[in-house]
Amino acid sequence: MSMEMYVFSDRRLESIEAWQQAIDAAGDPLQLSTERPFAELGGALPVMLRDRPTAFECDHWDAAELMADLPHITFDHPWRDVLAFRWGADFDVGAAAYWVPAAYAEATGGVIFDDEEGRLISPARAREVAVDLERSGPQIMEMMRRSMEDSARK
Image (cartoon, rainbow, N blue to C red; front, side, top):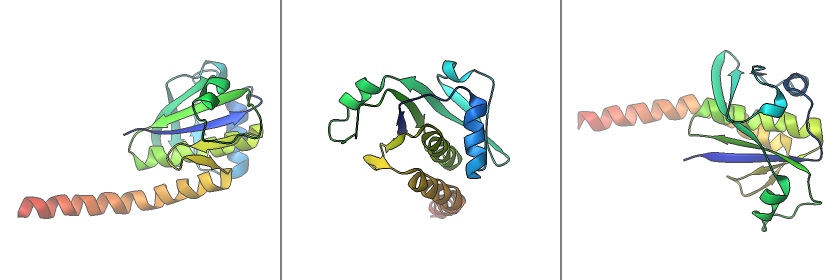
């Protein structure tokens, strides 16, 4: 199952470095890869979450087209740009994929559409989800491991 999130904005950041500055200013525990220029983003974007490498898909999409595909969402105006994020069922990736759009939305004055919640969310809400994912991930994985061991013993 893949998760998706989109940041709609009226401007793009000029570089990955500018995006990293927004992440650092917010105190988010991430380091973006600078291997590709921001304008060429497409596919996997490597990220360090604290000391753990991870990655998620990050692409520039057509804002008008995506807004048309979301008729149930009320946007306050027709946004000019959208940055799309997609990831799978991994807690570190999920946490990173919530923190990174939060900083991008703040830096560009944009809004976040969380496909999981089916609504626009604030950068603060995105950060809450990131913290929850990072905190609960190891506990959930441990519970799953124990459950599998118990099933194997029966």
